[in-house]
Structures are given as C-alpha cells and as structure tokens.
Image (tube, rainbow over all chains, first blue to last red; front, side, top):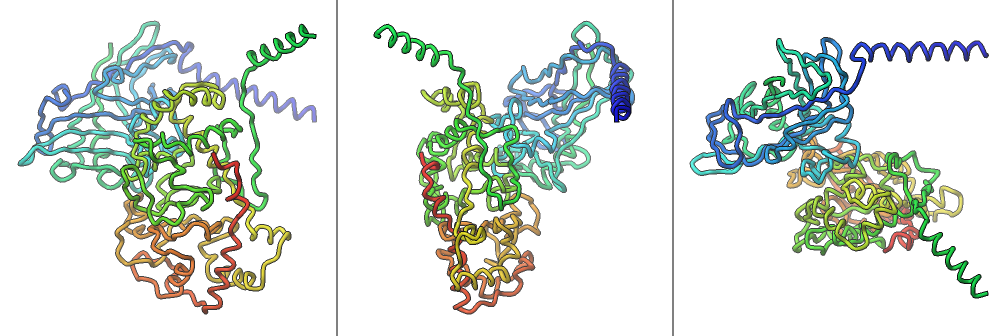
Length: 249
Length: 333
C-alpha cells in the first residue's frame, strides 16, 4: 500500500514537472504587456460614424451609426504553440474609443508570430446564466427572448430611392445557425517580441468585409437581422475575415 | 445596577456595530421523489437574505419602464403563480402579451423556459419579460440604475452578496434564488404516492387512463418531458412557436409540453389561452387533430375517452393541485 502511494506521488510529481517544462518553453517570465489597437475601416477609409457616406461591396451607399462587436478567447501564437488568455471577453465599440484598445498584461515574455480570437462569444458562455463585465446583459448585446449574445451589431442608413435604416445584429451559437467565427491573423514576416516594454499591435477591421466574399450582400435585400438564422450566418461568413494585420510598434 | 445596565447596553450596541453580516446559507429541501434538478445553485448558493431580496424584486414594479408592472403583476401565488384566468397578460401601457403567462414553480427542474424554450438558463429568464415591449418594456441598464439609486436595495444587496454595487448578475441571482425556492411537490397525488392518502375510485380510474393516453408527453413526476410538440391546435401558425427561436420550419407550431402540476389552477390553457377550462382541453384531444406537416406523432389520432372516462381524467388532474403551496405565506411579500 505504502509502495503504491509512493509511486502515485512520484508519478504526480513527474507529471507536474512535465507540465512546467511545457510552460517554460513558452517563456521564463510572464510580465509582457500588449495593447491591441483596433482600427475600423471601410476598405482604406477610416470609419467615421454618422456623417461619412461609403459605398459597400454591393454598391449600396451607406453611413454607419453604430458598430460594435465582441472579441473573445484571445490566443497568442508562437509556431505550433499558443498562449490562451483566460476569461478574455472584450466589447469593442466604435463610439467608445477606449474600447478599441484591448489591454493584455502578464503575458509570457517571448516572440509571437500571430494571434487568434473568436469574433463573438463561445457557446459555453451563451449557456451559463448571468455573466458580468463585458458580458453583462445590460450592455445591450444579449437577446433576452432567445438567450444568447449578439456578436456584432452594425446599424446605420443606406440609400435606396430614399434614405432607409439598416440594423444588422449577428448572433447564434447552435447548429445550423452557429455564427461564432474565429479570426487567425499572422504577423507575416514580422514578429511580436514581448519583453520589458509595452508593445502595440495594430489590427485593421474592415467593415466592408461584411458585404463581400463569399457572398455579396446588399442592404437592399437584407437590412434587418434580429435573431439567429440563415441571414446572420451569411453575414458572419462574410465578416470572418474582416480583421487583418496592421503593424507592430 | 444602573451601571450594569449601561454596560450591557454598551456591549450589545458594540456587538451589533461590529457584527460582520454574512448571509444565512440554507439548504432547500428538494422533494425526494423528484429527479436531480437542472439548476443546482452552483455559483449561487441560496441564502435567506438572497431569497428575501429576490422576493422583493419579484414583487417590485420598479423592474418595469413606468414602474407599474412587477413580475407578480402577472404571476399570482393563489394561481400557482400564473395570471389568474387571463388569456394574455397586461403589460406596460396596457399592452397585451402574445402568449398565456405560465405558472412559476419547480423551475429548478426546467432545462429551458418560455413556451418556445427560447430562454436557456434560470439566471437569464427574467431578462425576457423585463425587456419585452409588451410586458415590462424596460432596459436592463435602467433596472440596475433604479435599484442602485433606491434607498434600501443597496444595503440588501450588500447583505446578500457582499457588495452594494448592483450588477445584472446579482439581480438575476437573487431572482433565481427566490424563484428556485418555489417548489410544489405536495399535491394530493404526492400524498397518495407516499402512502399518506388514497385516491377515490374515480381518481384511480382517471390515473389509469392518464397513464395510457397522456403520459407519452406528460411524463414522470414533473408531468412533462419538456419537449416541443405541435398538439394539433391549428393548421396555420400565426405564432410560429419553437420555430421563432430555431428558425427551423420543422419546428413551426410546436410549443413546450407544460407540467400538469397545479393545472386546475392555471387556466386558461395552451400557449394562447384558447381553452378556458380543462374540460375544453380534454375535448380538444378527444376530437380529430388539425392536420399539418409538424403535427406530433403521438397525436396523429384522437384520444378515445367516453364522457365518464373524461370526467375521471379531470378528477385525477385535480389531485395534482398543491393547496399547501398556494397558501405558503413565505412566497408572499
């Protein structure tokens, strides 16, 4: 019996050592600081709410009054390894400049070549009852009548013969209307070195991606989405690639 | 002697002043003959302060946009927390709801809420009626602000949850504690099953018929399997039912199978309150179903019951009334 206990302790200590080794290969210290800055664009133009008119991929003239979305489950990538940031849920809102910078702290000090995150909220948090912080339902990103988060909201006006409103709310976490999309962004030839100083990672988010590839979506056809479903999935498929690498400072 | 009194008084006062108020944890007595609950209060241990706070919120019209409608406005204890005979409930500005208000009891066992199952967790259930423009018509952020500004709520939240800063989560946890504490499991039916009472001959016959004809959907001790079914009420669906949530054609006209506990108290019946009495409900099932693509397989043919048998089933259904529950003052303000 004693022997078994000894063996078990030995096994456990070996296992825990092994786990440490894996972590140590990522970095010896964990005081890296990173700000992710999200620059909202319509193609090459900076997004200005309310006043500026843009032409989207479907040829609609449009202006935007609200643009907000969730980013969650952020992972920093280093070759085949990754560093997951636990409980990372951020609500980004064009009208609130502070939300466009995501501050990450206590990161492994090493070099990274990419980043991955969910556009939206993972299914677990859609089913786990009342949440806090960015996920607090008072942030107006939760459907009360069909429990679940709204992952992305884009609202504004488009010109048909008249100026008409549009309101695209994308959400849904269940098959076949799952609108959770993952963005994986490589830093290309550049590397993100996290060491003593604060680093800035600038990402671009192109709102026009909502309307192009794989489907060209016109606001004239779909101008209002307020529930999970086929149309929400179409927009999610389109905006899945709206984030791209900008620069590292 | 006076000095002693003063000293004692002083000690009492200081003791009160220093008392760290921690909420009184309680274990809810779950009925032994029920399955294990879906909501197990993990991360929300019930306390007497939490339940009391939830009850205060439940009875407070402050949760609505013009402070006229409380949860309790449409959920009355004496009707097993349903809306006493109303087909549709009246919300803010006199608007009528879309569906008949269900009773509230045994919610710990519900895997989902609302007639279409749109709400997936007890802790987010109140968000639906609070934000519905036909019901309480309020924004969650406003609810939180009003509670924060009130004279007495912050102190109650501090006692129940250790902090007086109001968040949606704390409001929802308190409501979940109160609603979760509403358990109804001591109907005459339960007493008979526990060997403490006896069915009449008619009730016994009714139970037998019920088991043969109705228990395919109204399963087990909760008298529901919580599935969504089209029970042949109509062939065109002005209310898409479950399809409203799933956007799936094959869910059109399907609604949640309700529990039949306290069913004699929760008239009218069906998602739209179309039947005023249980007799009308039984007559619906005794007649040919309205045919449609999503009609439930269990009900493709009508149920064969004679008038006498129908009366027996009604007698059995009345044994599911828990009269102790609707007289329980603990659930009143």
